[in-house]
Image 1 (cartoon, rainbow, N blue to C red):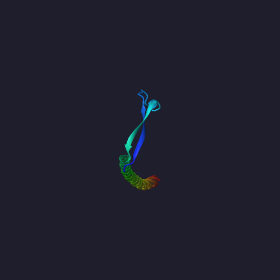
Image 2 (spheres, one colour):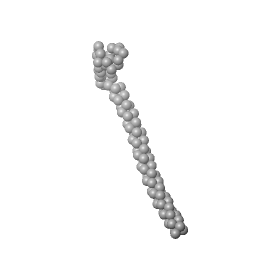
Image 3 (cartoon, helix red, strand yellow):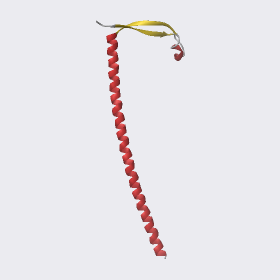
Image 4 (cartoon, helix red, strand yellow):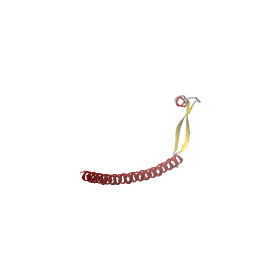
Length: 104
């Protein structure tokens, strides 16, 4: 045997301001709803939300992995940049030393 549910629905007056229309209801009408249909709809919505949650979780995990990858890349480039700076500095010192030795 199917259970039946009566759900209240507020009927609003026509108003130019929709936020005021919610508070200006005139009648409260109860609609007969078959609870099995309501449960099925709720289960469908729940499944859709679960699917969306799964997709969003996967996308978030991929984004985190990408961020980690790029942080490692940036660290590698910074180390390389520091190595080149040291090499340039050593070259500058060598050139300056060479110039100083030749001038004296």
